Image (cartoon, rainbow, N blue to C red):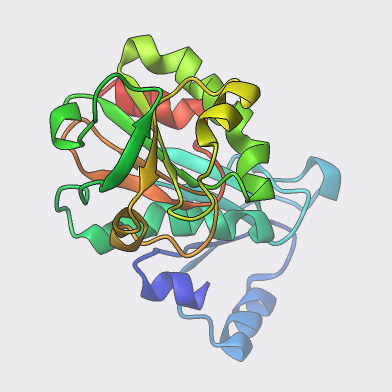
Length: 230
């Protein structure tokens, strides 16, 4: 949590009811916790039915992630929320600048080359992947589902295939029933974002700025709905 806080995450502790305030304060002092902590009012209850701040919290530590717009971006055990928090914070590294341009060696599933500049006004999902990457291939159906569901509402999905091992990619896409545009990266695109693991996903808003990304899981339909509804 400290590392995430240093990147800009605001942490607020929420302690369930049932523990004397003095005991909670002692733990905060002993552990040198620097973030504010809320002690819920009321009495403690069954752990399975426990609610803290209006959220179910039968597993501890339990986290609720709220994005910069004040909307719940996810909630669950701390181990599951770390990656989600990274996805919210990493776009800050782009400093509000336009999303880096894509540099394609070749395009597939597209009649013409696409550019992020030409796609302003659309929501763009970038999927950095490779046919040699098992997790990438495993997630392709989920990305294809997002493409099919939102393509007529303003979402453009672009698969950015790695520069290596792209032989017979057209045959691979046909076999896997991938219909969204796919570019073979020259190698520059993955460095500009940057991509340090595969697959990695980014969302670009209609203004052409990266608003979510560096996640190794595709965005939820709800997150795309939010961007399309702006």
